[in-house]
Every structure is written in structure tokens, then in C-alpha cells.
Length: 174
Image (tube, rainbow, N blue to C red):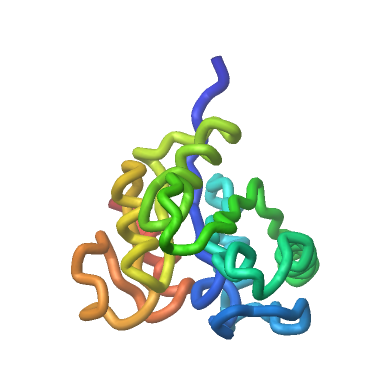
């Protein structure tokens, strides 16, 4: 039996990189301020880092899965100078009308990653900038962080204006 690891599940658009709507280029993959050092702190604290992203533009025919994979290779290149590696990447390609279990606010992507990476969901966090991110984390049994204005998501365990501020809260002694 492998020991279970804590993880931080991370939304992509609006959390790690700017939210450009339906991002259909690789050039739009730029880190938001403070993201690299914040993720380094989480990795140093022993958290696996797992990207959890809805990309309904694939299902809508706006861009291909291959483009999204290229965006994620670019994201990995942007994180490398900080010594940060994503342990996993989960992508839901379905539109909002699809009854899949993977699309946030459903917890399917988090549960799949947890099985594959031996993650202890109760010791993990889901961080994102939309209420659906918080709902997916809560449904999976994680503590939840909303990145943005606190009033926008009162059901989150914690609200922070930036990922760096969220990391301060995650790493604070209890």
C-alpha cells in the first residue's frame, strides 16, 4: 500500500494563467504574477500539484485537444524555471450540456487524479477562480480556495485575492 499524498488541485484559466475566454493560441499561456514562486512553496511543502481544467472549446470545435496539450507543454516550460513540475493534468473536453462526471463543478477529474497519484483528498485543496472550482473540490472532499473577491464565493473555505495569498493561508500553521 502506497502512502497517500496531499495535493493542490489547480484551475488553469484565471488561477495560473490569465483567463482569455476560449484560449486558442499557445502564446496566451503566460503565468499570472506570483504563480511560479507560490507553486514552488507548495511543492517544497510536500504537495503534489495537479492541473484540473474544463476546456469546453474542444467539444465546441473552437480548438483541438492537440492545441490544449501544446498549451500545457508551454505551461510546463513556464513553470520549469521555478523548479515546479505538475504531477498530473486532467482536462474535461466536454461542453456544459454534456452529462459527464469530469466537468467541474462535478468532482470526476479530481477523483481520477487522486486514484492515479495516490492522493489523500481530505488533506488536499482545490484552488480556482470560479464557484464551480470550489464546488468540485467540496464534492471531492477537499478544502477549497477561491481566488478573487471573497463575496463572489462565500461557500469556499477561504478566499484570497491571488494564488500567492491563498498559499500563505494553506501553509499557515493550524
